[in-house]
Length: 543
Image: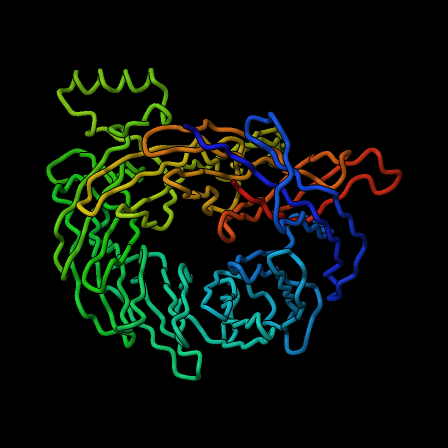
């Protein structure tokens, strides 16, 4: 029996002018009920309990403004942005507001940070929100190029630590452990580094994870009890060959162990991976791999950048116990990844060349999510995307007045196409797979856009696009409810969504989600100001 899917949209609205650093209440609108939308759109009911309608809108001048939202679980959410107010010593004011579960503003406070700092990442402990900022690499001549800002929501206290990253390193991942910030620093064509910054006043420790070869840290996990790091590293041994290692370090940078992740077959190369440490001695590794194709000539290979499939491996006591590979073409739901005619043609080609279907590759671009443990299975989630471009032509004239045509290519963003979800058991066997069709979603920010909400043995796959929430319910390989779209309610009945940009949806707590982004809204029923651009965030409940 399929489970009924309800989506509750909360539409309690504030409009606040935060650019001047003070909260000005422009208007307050309370709806008399909460809209409950069944996927089948057959009925509307009112929820019981303390659910309150919640949606907040902030006037915006453009969608290039720097509003950010961070989920802090049940305590609430943090909203922050960079203002245009200059402070002393080449600093600019950032404003921070904390909202509780009912999206009521608890406090607002500003902090002066070095001008031109850009927000990069965050980490959350039980009582502290930690934000990492960095100067763009092109900014030279500064003694410091990063700032770590600790926020204590309970007493709205701020603590700032500053320092300098080596070279042109980029902080890819970031996590706070007690009073130590662990920062993963990757730099193109250089050995990756790990910085351990003691925020209590100690001197930061920075160490490389490879010697004399370029490397990239793909993922890491922290053992806070033993003060150790487990790191997944890809080392570029030659132009067309790379090797992946599972390495362990202590917080001082001392290498404890290193295990080569063998792919068994040299024709395979690991593209990306995620780690899940079941214990200090056991690590599950799930990621993606590609096929190296012959370029011509003995031992010459061509590395294909596209992804071929998933792999799953397990390391116990510094030994790789097993590794399995699963081509996307062998998945049960491959029909959703490519046209049936294309699959038939590919199978005929495999037979004609006396090869297996797994010898071919879909060459997908994939964005991997973290591994999720569900019961005794490890679930990995990924999103497929393609960069899109268009060409523009213009006519100019040479020295003699003769016309000639030139063209240039413009990047239009990343087009998301599909989401693939797969589950593996403890022995690295593929138990089930499924996918989600992603429609009308293009963005300049290559970030995870799809959510997986687990409930009573079922998985709800969701994403936000064009003011609508797409959702699909699955159980293993089976589809319980097909892809469906439900629009998010706006403030007034006459409001019409004209355009939406930089929108995102993420899990907040329990079965509550938060949607946010920039909406351009038109309302012909208003005599004045009938068009507005706002940054909004709304609380949404799935049942």
